[in-house]
Structure formats: structure tokens, C-alpha cells
Length: 191
Image (cartoon, rainbow, N blue to C red; front, side, top):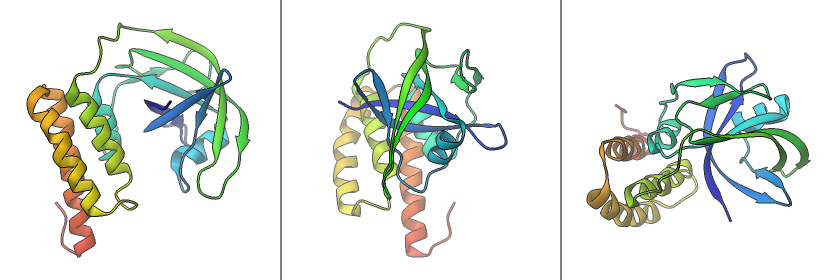
């Protein structure tokens, strides 16, 4: 099973970096598997720690993929890292094993601290659609345009029926990112 999360890492200059990640859990360990090249991968290997943030604010997922990374953070309690202020819960992680791969290494982490901050009330369909669209945006260079268009058409139904202000904002950021990517592919000026 894959869980969609926001992973915060530390850049070489000490500043925070955040990225959405689908993580897996196995035998009490958390597996993060970034594609190469990746700022997150470099940070994880260098610092050997991370913070896994669980949030229902889908703007953070969409924002992380569209250049909107200025979300309020606070220092982690056990590892050198950052906790997303909007996290409903967070888990502080320490790297224990690297399974190297030329495309997508698997990094296994031990949870050294976890904390609940607020109750999770569940996702509405628009939130789930924004997360799915975020995955599509993260793979724009890997997926054919027809697949992206077909999936967006289906996901739009849930957004139109159930989105609140936050979900609409995140959805529009993602659509803008897709259009900018396609404009660049066509050699057109981007907004």
C-alpha cells in the first residue's frame, strides 16, 4: 500500500525542502523511493533523516509541484528537520538502509518520533482528485499527453462536485503547470 505524504528534507545550506512522496511501510520501516535525479534524494543521503508530514491541505501537494513551497514550518523535535505547520501528524525518520538503483533507489527509515496534531476527518473526492492530479504533474515528462488528458477529464468531475476553496486553488495551480509544460514543449513563451 502506498500513502501520499509530504516529505521535508534539509538542503545543503540548511534550508528546508519539501516534496510530495508516495511512501510504503514494511517490517516497521518507512520506504521512500525518489527517482534520480532528485533534490530530495541528495538531501536524504546527505542528512540521513527526514520528516514525513500527513496533511489534508492538498494545496501543499500541488504547491510543492508548482513552485509554491513557502508553507509555514517548525523545527522537528528529534531529527534535524522541519515539520509542516498544517500537518495533522508527523513522523521523524532516520535512514537505516539504502537499496541502490540507477533509476529509483529505495531508502529505508526507522521512525524515531511521531506526533498527532489534529484529527483527520477524511478526504473529500476533490482532495483525492488533486492528489491524483499532483501525481500526474510529477510525471509530465514520463506520461503521454493523451493519458494525462483522459485522467484529468475524469478527475475534474470530482473537483467540480465537491471542491472547496483550497481544492479549487490547488487544482488550478496544477492545470496551469500542465499548460506551462506543454507550452514549453511547443517552444512557446510561458506565463
